Length: 256
View (cartoon, rainbow, N blue to C red):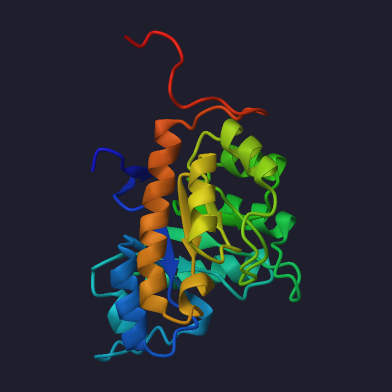
């Protein structure tokens, strides 16, 4: 607990955030969430039945108080849609920490920068703790910070692509300039991708498809848990400098 992730007024022991979509059933979802060790679970409000809270339903699972629920606006294409969706979530008592996602293109699922900024301004003013999904654009991330977002969530690659970290250089710039946590969101495909994100200095990783569509989702959830932890420890430890030529591991002088 000495290395907690703080986002606004919230604190989390785990730096892995996981989604609830694409699993074969609720039982598999539950098993994967537990194996991941995640403290935050994100739910696509437009893709679940918010009123069905019967035993064994998705809403029964996510509202079990085992996790902090991060409602998201997946499937929204305008600021108006996104704001309306999150206001509904708040009325239903799901919470005020939210993932803002406004899609600009149905093929790539890239976010719409202009609509994301517009929605973020409204939600921040209304008291939400806003975590916006965005392009890996340092200027956009700076603007989102400036209007009061509690974190920024740049993509590693398109949603669900599994391509891994496509532009580590932009992520480094975002991290260097960040005054709020940076959480990589989208594009992670396997454990090494999560470790790389953390080694770069990201504060956390959010994923769904990489776990849900693995051949063994529960085992992949465990792998992601370990990868995020290892990557964070490696970042805090500080890697050795890279060298062009070899260097002997054993000293040639000073040995008696």
